[in-house]
Structure formats: C-alpha cells, structure tokens
Image 1 (cartoon, rainbow, N blue to C red):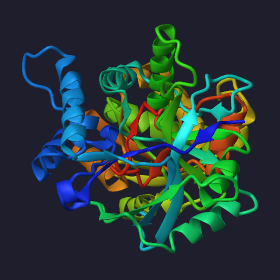
Image 2 (cartoon, rainbow, N blue to C red):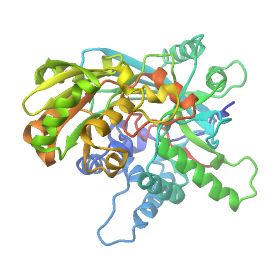
Image 3 (cartoon, one colour):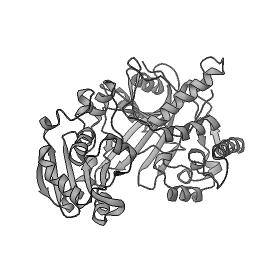
Length: 437
C-alpha cells in the first residue's frame, strides 16, 4: 500500500508579502515567456523565482538553479517563507468553470507527502504517461539545488464509500488560511489540518488515500525526477527514514467529477494533394458526416463536458469540416501492442489513423515536426485557415475518461504523448515541501 504522511509545509507569510495572490503562480510547465515576465513583475517574491528561475545571457546553465537556491535561503531567513510548527495535511479546494461552458464545478483534495516507490508490477504508485528527458533534467537540476518540491505531483485514489468526500466537506466549512483568485478565474482555497492522531480528519484522509494504489494523474516528470534524486541521496547518506524518500502530492478522489481536457492535433506539411488524399481515405477507418467549422469548434471547445472514449473526432481543413466516428473493427489490426484499455483510447486510434492515412508514423510524431498541439479548438481552426507554420488540417478530440486512465495504468501500459490535461492546475506557492523533517 502507498505510504502517505502529513508534513510541515513552507508557506508564504501574508504579513511579509501582502496579498497571497501576487506571490503564487501556475506550475512551471504551463508558463510561457510572457507569463513568466508578468509574474516576475507582479511581486519581487513571486514563487516563479523558485519554480522557474530566470536565466541570464551567457551564464553557466546551472547558475539559475543556484539562484533559486539562494532565493529560497534568503526567503526562509527573512520570514517570507515560514515552516508550519506541526505536521499537517493541507485541504485544497478549487472552484472553477469548465472551459468553454457555463458549468461551475468544485474540486477538493489534500496535499501530503507520498513515499517514493519505483514503478513496476507490484508498485502501489501507477503511471500512465511517457516522459521526455528534457523536462526531467530541468526538474532534477532544480531539485538538486534547492531540496524543495515546488509543485505537487497529482495523484488519484479511490473513495468508493465517500469517506474522504465527507471529511473534506467538513474541513472546508471552516475558515481557510488562503483564498486566491487566479488569472483564469479559478478560486483556490487552503485549510491547514494538523495531524492529531487516530480518528482525526488528517488521519482519516491519509487512511482512505493510502488504502489502495495511487494513480499519477499529472506530474510524471516530477515523480521520475524525485526517484532519481532519492537514489542519488541514498548513495551518500546513512540517514534513517529520510525526508528525500517522499515527495509532495495533491491527492484527489477518482470517484469525484474531475475535468480532463483533450489536446487537439494540428497536422503540418500535407500540402494540397496530401490533404485531399487524407480526406478521400477517411472512409477506410471512419464513418464520415459533413459538418461546419463553427459547429465543430463550438462542440470541441466545450470538450471538458464531453464523455470521451467513444472514438469521435472532428476534422478541419481550410475549406471543409467533418465529424468522424471510428469504425472499431477497422482499427483491430492497426493499434499497437498492449492491453485493451490503451488500444481503445481515442489518442491511440488517431495515431494509427495518421500512420495509415497520412504516413505520419510514431517516429514522425515524436520528432515534433508534423504535429502541433493545442488545447483550443478555435486556435486549431485559426492555424489551419491561415496555413500557419504549414498547418493543413486539424483533428479535434474528446477527453480521455478517468476510468480509461486508471485502466491503462493498472494494466502496466502508458499512453501516447498529450493524452490528458487535468484542469485546473494546482497553484505553485500555496504549499512548498522542503525535503527535511
């Protein structure tokens, strides 16, 4: 079973920084250069200085990580960051509107430490996604310099009896220690729940989440980086039960409504003849229904409300648009090896279709030159209509169902790149996990 523990978080002191909304940030992997500059300008002690430190021209590549470490030391010394006096779990609530809709949703979970376990058939921690070496190296260098988890890995657990749901609802009836509205209109609230032993709310949450496997929903790069860092530290340490054996995780119940958004595929370099050939061959794999650009964008821009997993896609070219329904029997010999769950994913079927109908195989996808990814159906349409960067067509996807994510991970398989995007993201800076007791 997974081992989950309360911990003593580092948190920004409102008396030192003022409005907490000015010092928190989105996680590093959704911050582009413009947003990074905006966050740096928003407050001199914004958490982006720790999570995505800015580099200087012609400096040693590792210097920006050392700068983050010096910043952390300074902020701990001057009271910007204070360590909570007692081990706690940190209940977290996000109230948001599902993108592209008027539907309001509330998501609740809690932050705690998870003991790091290597992946494998007997592991209580299950991945579902392939990782890339570049992001892992960046996160490793930052972790090595700071010994700090700045952003959480997100893990899913089962709560079939609703015990965690009831405990979380009881906690959020109290006054939060943080209440922040982010730039996307998501409201983030945080409660500190000290560990008071058996029967306490903290113990109840830890007990439920630790009663079965934990599925990694988001943060695979951070998790694999933590494994590497732990193994490195173990080699030179005789410490018993070290803090570096754990990492920061946001635990969410898989039984509750969660928002998973798709990532649409914009296809480059087909040319006029290649696009026409792709369209002509669609009936080999799909039932094809004419549609319009407006109708498809409206449908797939609100994809967070779609069920997903049914083999339905939208296809846009510059002149025309279609709804596509996968003919399952046609894909039987095209999808790669693996369990039933991974072979029946929409993203797996689309990968097979691109190979068969357009000659874009897995190697071409991995190279990154033939496909551009976007969360927005409207952006996909605009890129195709403008022919931007060689864009000739766009496949619009529905989300991957949570049940499919759990099934793929339980079977020991992993999904293609850009299969899931959990929304909303947890803010960086509400709780930080120093790798110390």
